[in-house]
Amino acid sequence: MKYYNMYMDRQVISQGKHRELLELPAGRRRQSGRPWMGAAALAACALLAVGIWRFAAPAQSTGGSAAGGTGGIEAVAPGGGGTNGPGVPLEAVDPSTLPAMPAIQYPDATRVEMDMARMRMEGSFQVELSREELLKILWNGEDKPEIPWMLSWGDCDLGGGALYRSDGSLVEVYLWGRLEDTPAFSITLAPGEVPFNCGIFSGAARSEIRGVEVASCKYDGGYYLELLANGVGVRASFVGVADSLLPDAFVNWGTYEDGGLSLDHLLTAEHVPEWRSEEFSSLAQTRGEEKFAPYLPTVGPANFSEFHGHLTYQEGYEHTLYARWRRGYSEVSISIYLPEGEPRWDTTVDVGNPASYDTGLYELPWGSSVPKEYFDTFQNPVFRAEDMSREVVEARAYTVEDRGDADGPRMGFSVLHPDGTLVKYSAKGLEVGPMWALVEESLGDATPDGGNP
Image (cartoon, rainbow, N blue to C red):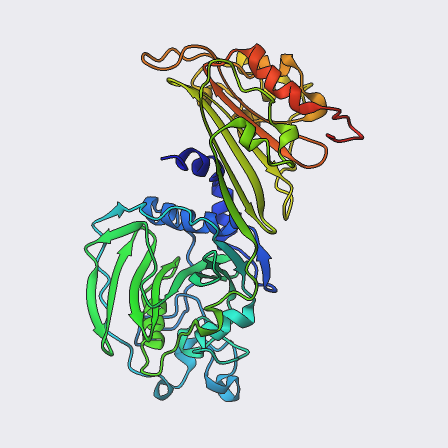
């Protein structure tokens, strides 16, 4: 449990982020921070569990095929030329060029069980993948300029990325597709095994296609597949499609004897970022990390004797220190995020507008009393260091009468320093005065034109 609070503190996923994850543009490969990939895994679990993947289906084709139509996505015939050139609907393709489609059943899933056995992997990292790299996956490792025509995806937009362990070995690859801004599929691939899934469907059908066992079902809003073929494990969800042509075509392509899918070119990361993790048993030991010392108190809160500290560093993504003091049910924590990689903190609260952060202006539960325009910032507002005062801290204090819990106020807020460092404070059972003392000591010479020493 010692990492639980720290882990959950970092994972905040809005529905807007869900949409962004499904709409990542294809682009050049680059080292990327964990937020989008960590969120991708969590979002995939959440989406499968609660059925958020309810998107408008693409316009259906007016014609029909033996497989039941294209669901609005066009297939490109082999060679991309002649009478069946790029963009020609599937029903217009000469049937003699199509292999026999597999017979796959899609019973309705009876329920979804949640398995959260795999949480965040220490030192893991991810990179975005270019369209060329994604196409290479689909062409069994070969360089091709187009999506395989037998997938019936046409020229849909592709996006995705790869998740790696701290040693640079591949964990999973994520691949998304969309047609005219409408999500069409989400595919996770892993070397040697079916990728981990926190949402487990019951009642899936089992089929054998070319010696490969395929698990398949329908869920609220789409079709779902699991298979392991030619050393590549797959979890695939197809959403907003009118029929099963897309998942059937994907299984057909992926189970060829020679293999239609390959991850060989992604098995090892080109660059493995430096990473370290440290545990601390005292405040003095924690203050030995010089870059964090200006934001830590010289003395911890009085009568809070139990201490735990943890540092995580990863080149290009994060440089974070977490310190926590406990006394019975009371707890005080400070999380310090040094600038590393792309800036993540760009919205601060206007202290001249107490309505956006003052807990004394509203009644619990806040969900029904705080105006919608302040809801995103009210729960944990970010203040500029030069705006901080005891009055601001006091405005964040509130009490909850829970039997058996800690007495005293509760507080939660963050302070953004001029150098880009963010310090997040959380307390239960600590008075306003001692909390302000922790904050004030960290402010140093923070001014609108200067920074901490």
